[in-house]
Length: 308
Image (cartoon, rainbow, N blue to C red):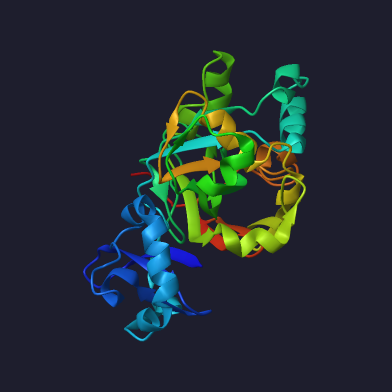
């Protein structure tokens, strides 16, 4: 199933379900109020709500529908509980470190590492992204993310799959010049990542991807384009650490809750920092960035002309 959040005529966010290629429903309205009107509450009770949808699919689809092209989408989960971003594609790590004159550290191969990003700075498809103050090196990052759908602590990797609700595309926008300075201090990234993370356009339930299982990920092509030109291409099957291993690490001594986002980190070639500015300069106002992952859709964002 493909869940989303759309904006109704009153400007309010509504939880939706895509029922065909271009039709969606308001799950709260079409269930006569049984299903929540927002995705975070849906995730908190997703076991009973998913059973309701499976049992009442024809009833839900017989209600009011909307055309996707006529609908404005927000991030599928506009208000996640938290956002951890991992560093799980070896090619990206090697190349990015090499570009800075650094070797791989042996600890990277011992356990998956992550940082906390700003879960209150979520943007969705078609939203403009503004370069933060003091930044001249704005970059995109091509990632896949999972969304937690079940509470758990000290989760073993063998059991981690049952805690995943689904997956989405993630763009971990980066202010590289700000990030470069703060990383020299040995604590971060922080302000270099503080201004925006885009996710969407959909939240795809994990069962949709089971036939694509490959290696530690899925056999799904990942592509990034800027102004229509392809710059990045990778595959989620190239993950060095699986989402199960990430969840095991994240939940050690800590409870994970429904609505938390876990990002994979950038796929190999998946950012300008890794490609080098000879391939493409840093992003500028007016640039259109498109991230596409097979089966998950296309996440589009334009760089705005002025900050907020």
